[in-house]
Length: 403
Ligand SMILES: [Ca+2]
Image (cartoon, rainbow, N blue to C red):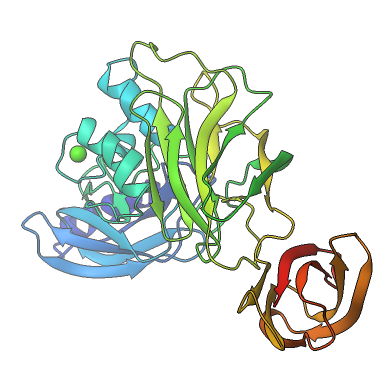
């Protein structure tokens, strides 16, 4: 800004000396949220006439500096854009927008622009809901675009309005994020507490708890799962008007506390989730906490460290295994159809009704369904119990009738 003034004074001398055109330099810095500590690189700063004609563009470097030289006297508008990755948006920003709508806080011009995620010049419930539902739950882009910059009017005649340009990642109302810098990572972990046994066809419901959490103002939670092995049947998220969706391999939930705090009755359960196992399960079936997960304390701030708990999801022993004899009753031979999770040698034992062992042999099985022909030629007609012990120590039983 000093430079503009000095250049202007120099220009004035030139005019006095009957020079025709005064030449000026317009320069400054593009800063994240006006913060001199956080310049924004790779911003295309456009210098426009007040009539909207583009004169020149300048792309900022790492220090955020831009400069236009040899600019004739006049009033201009700086308008900026960038392609760098946006970020920093979470439920804290939605919480701030709600405070603004209620009239409890005010926004600076760049905060207002960041909050107007729909880009219609108004900050209202539509912007709030866009962050809470469309952005966080469904990952939809902001209608206002990924970045917002305040247009700056600069004049070569005065220091007013010259200089720095403020920009923000759209939606980052709180402005705590640093472009090209660190990511906001809270320490949130999901620990196993107890075991939930999953059996074919059964729906198992369990809570996700935050045992140390007493109160909260909101959350954005992401739980990842393997959709090949687990079906999410139902999700009941904590809080009035909480939102959730199962999107691909994620359960995404969001909630902000009501205006009147009428739903302040947190008792440690963030969600109740009902699941069912799918098919022949082999993969990891436990829920994992997505890294976007965050929780706001009762003042709206993100909680830095929090431990959540959910039961370990376990496949009940013997699930996926089966034993069948056919035809039954049989004479001569019968088919032993056996399905196991693990290949290996299984021991077949046959007992008569007096409990005496009358036959014993090993069979070699592969993982999956096997069919083995059993010779019944030496069996006396009657009823028997056939017991198979598999390589992984599972025991399966079936009745055997020989004619
Ligand atoms: Ca709006």
